[in-house]
Image 1 (cartoon, rainbow, N blue to C red):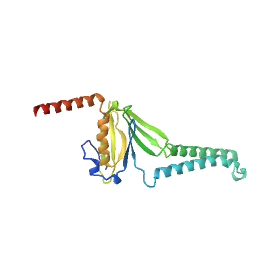
Image 2: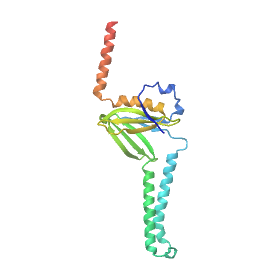
Image 3: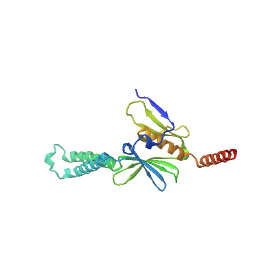
Length: 213
């Protein structure tokens, strides 16, 4: 039986426990925030599956129309009805497979600090993006990790929306990497007013300690 646990503990700097070459996540800084995605292997499996899916989809669509040029004698019974049924099956399957392949098999987490929202998008090998979900930072109560008590099981970065909605999964990967990302995300989703209050409190504490000394 798998057991799920949650954690929000502090962690040491990632560089001290996980070398760069062993990480599976990478962060790309942007003008509006940052993007978290899985690092691409030397052999990009997602791109290979995506290309194969597009090719298979096109082949099925071609077959859906190409079989109309075959002699009717190859089809027993009502040739027109059989060709029509085959066209529908091949055409629908081809379009579905091609659509699934072009929607993107890679998932990115976009943290937009300008619009103050989180976005999970599917990305394909051609740079196309498809929005999977988005949530405003003001609608997030907390960010936490969900772990499965099983060897080599991945951890999950989750956010808990306000008003009692179900937690939302943002990313999956190495627990150590996700804990560092969790700490950054917790700071980012904090309302600006709370950040100002924290900064003022730190300044007051610093001035008080200076005067006392």
